Image (cartoon, rainbow, N blue to C red):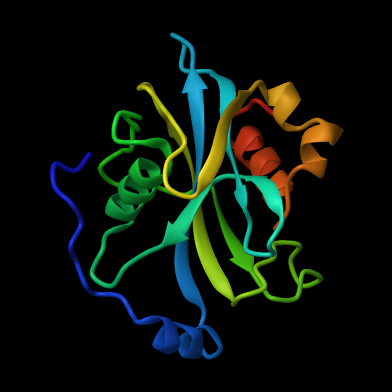
Length: 178
């Protein structure tokens, strides 16, 4: 967690960012927040309800860009705090390793992971959180779902951008895919 406001200015203005998005892939992190029991088994998956890049109101995971000069762990902590609050208490190893790499494209037919704004390469992580989580900033809600609920047909209908697949991949990586 950070004790101060992030005042780094090592990002691009909107006009330059839009130009870059059309020319090179951007590096992102996706974090699937989970609750675990005393044995370390995933019991619940956290999903935000917010406006997705395609404009829909959808269930999503924590996601965001990696800033220039920022380590992956720092990016994960920053985005988890931004979306879940400063008391979420994520447990991220000093040297985190993703469970998969996701490639988002403007054309959803390429990989099934879709972002209409640009091509992005995202490192995806399952992140246990043990603190008090609340939706912040642009999220409307944060819901906690059992693995069975998170992979249900109803929940799949509430997700866009391929996040339904990402949730299934995350649960499979920790041995909890129903």
